[in-house]
Image (cartoon, rainbow, N blue to C red; front, side):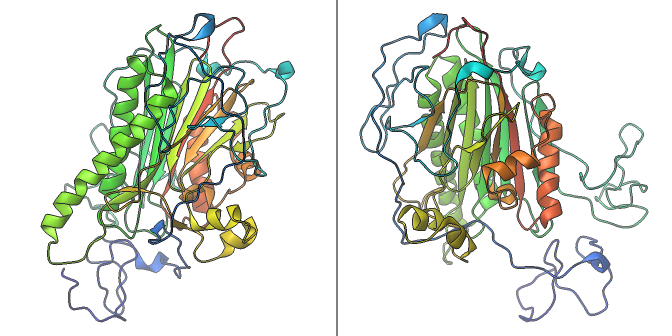
Length: 463
């Protein structure tokens, strides 16, 4: 049904935004049960703030020592990184002693309250069982598959028969509606889950948005020496842009493909991450041409999204990002401090970095979630952030969109929300974290990848 001429005060369906008539109990467009609709609270989707230059906070640090070709200790022979960052500085190859972390210019990460300070290696814990067996060499990975809503119990069904996610009793007809209660079934991207042997991810539409504009990709590869590498990429579509769902899907897929190819060729993971973000940006930029053709008589923002990715390879943890999607570190034994590994490209982060506001004041402001960095044709100069870490104990990396961290912003909060057995059951951990966001209100799309990190056995090589 067309919505071109509806009045401004006419109510709409909270699921598909179809106009409603007075007294409707179900949406005529999607079958949504209107009796269960609650009052819509203020929402804080990912937005672009134009006209604000990027200021990346960075504490003074000593540049990393130059490393020659090859990795010491029998690890994979990674060649020197050949790319340069936005300042023209070559992306360095990082050595084991370079902890807690360095960015793509070789400088230490900022000393904020959640800075990554690794304790002495005296208390190294056991390698998590989930990471004991290395993944097989990469093969074409199956796409994420839609799953039943995690807020409802599972129901057994005959092979080939879909059961309604609302009443959990009726069969779903070919048009996507329940034959028992008439409820429209979730679209393919409303809820997706994927698990490999050493990484898992879950994405959910949330309780307030009419579609899921997040996307993710998880995969594994084999380095040239046969050792495993694990990849997780999470993207959040910018809600104020055109086709944000397509932007996030294109970015996550392109970044994942670029990372797998580069790692298998022996490219250093930090260089591979830098190149993958550039590839993701190009994929999103390519969508702008089709948007201009379709809407040549209307003003449209180009498709845009944020991105954050993690690579675990040969004892090294590499993070890359643009925007306000985040990565967190949580040690398995919880004996060491958890940490946030990324710095947001956002209005709030800029205010805190400039000393104009406290973190609490900045994130309480209505402008807090306006981002100052993103992937898209109308973005400022592309400046991928990358950081490498050398943890001395096993732990878990949580890679997520703001739909999760809005409900667990601090590293300590994220650690409390993460199950203790996350390294052994990454899919379950991701499901619990998504549930945590939904229980908190689910105001935004929620996507999280859980990546276990195992410390290599003593004597094993690393980069």
